[in-house]
Structure formats: C-alpha cells, structure tokens
Length: 249
Ligand SMILES: Nc1ncnc2c1ncn2[C@@H]1O[C@H](COP(=O)(O)OP(=O)(O)OP(=O)(O)O)[C@@H](O)[C@H]1O
Image (cartoon, rainbow, N blue to C red; front, side, top):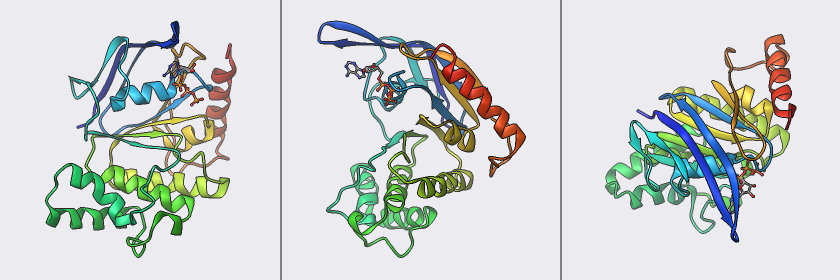
C-alpha cells in the first residue's frame, strides 16, 4: 500500500519573526502505485510539500496521511531522492545501498540479495564496487534510486532529481525511471519545474499557484507510455499546462 492524502494542508514559516505562507489549503490524494508530478514556479512550496511528506517539516494546518495514518516524522515507508544525489563519496555503490538496510537492521544475508537485486534493477550490474566519483551523473542518480528503493518504501519522493543532468542524460534517466517504476510499481511524488518532465513521467500533474501555493488544477495525463513529444495530444497537454502555469503566475 502507499495511499497519500493531503487534507487542507497549509504551511506558514516564521522568517525571523515575519510569517511566510508557503502553502495554503492543499487537498488531493495520490492512490497506491500512482505517479504524481507537482509543477509550479520557484517558491510556490513544492519542496515544502515534499518535505512534509518525508516528515522533515510539519504542516501548520491540515494533515497528511499515508494509508490512513498521520505522517509524524521521517520513516522507512517514505524515501527521498535529491537533485545532488547525496551519496557517500567514501562508500562504493554496494556500500551506499547497504547503508539504509543496515540502519533498518535488515539481516546481512538478506542485505546481499536486496543489494544485488537493486543494482540490477537500476542497470548498474558490474559497477557495484565502484565509488561515486568513478561514475557519471546519471549513474550516480541510479545509485540514489537503488538506495531509496532498497529499503522497500511505500512512497518514493523525488525533488528535481534530474535537474543537474545535461539534456541527453536527463531524457535517458527519465526513460529509466519509467522503466523501473513499471517493473516494480510504487507510489511516486515528483517535484519538477519542467512541463515536459511532468508529461513524460506522471499519471497526473498537480499544478500549484505562485506563493502561497494552492492547487490550481490537477491534470490527468492519459497518454500511453513511452510518450511521444510530437503526439498532438502531448502538445495539447503542454499548451494546457503552460497556460495554467503562466495564468496569473
Ligand atoms: N525554513 C524556511 N524559513 C522561512 N521560509 C522558508 C523556509 N523554507 C522555505 N521558505 C519559503 O517558503 C516558500 C516555498 O519554498 P519551497 O522551497 O517549498 O518552494 P519551491 O516551490 O520548492 O521552490 P524551488 O522551485 O525554487 O525549489 C519560499 O518563499 C521560501 O522562501
């Protein structure tokens, strides 16, 4: 299971005594196994929303629940993938993936099997004993994906995971993410600035308004995968999302 519910979620930060409303009254659901993209301008509260699901931040209004239980702090049922990979540079691919499993107290015999499975799942067979600085950016992000999935989370959280990659690598990692997600379905919440990334990957896109972030619209993406950027339906969705993003900012 991995059903996420956002119920009237708000977040007001205290910025040196001045209140900053980052999010206001956000209500939507992500059903188990669905891929949801959060799209909006810089500063509209996308990362705040993700951090609250991760349990790094607490809503100041409303509630977030996972499978009916309120989210209260970080847990293994939600793992995050960051733009800068956040790998341990002194550890090999295998050791990076092992870290969470050790923390979770998974027995050593099981760990090896889980690591091998995830190294293979992300297409890094043969690279398990390399260090991060011996890998390309795309390969490092594959390690981060393997590490996040290895602890069997119910929800995978991604904050602009491919923003640091060049165009070609970004496209190939987007395709890889869809391949991995279809092979082992998982609830995914992905934050992005990119309209194309949202349409290429997601089942639906939650468009947020500029600060304070409110839901402008939830747009379903009913296109077969892999998605074709020249498809007239793709282009129509792109126009629709561009209009929503720029309408009133
Ligand atoms: N710890 C904090 N204290 C005060 N204000 C904060 C804090 N964290 C975020 N904010 C403010 O809340 C708003 C939303 O920030 P957030 O990082 O969630 O937006 P975002 O949509 O992810 O932006 P970007 O796309 O640039 O990463 C911004 O105006 C930001 O300045």
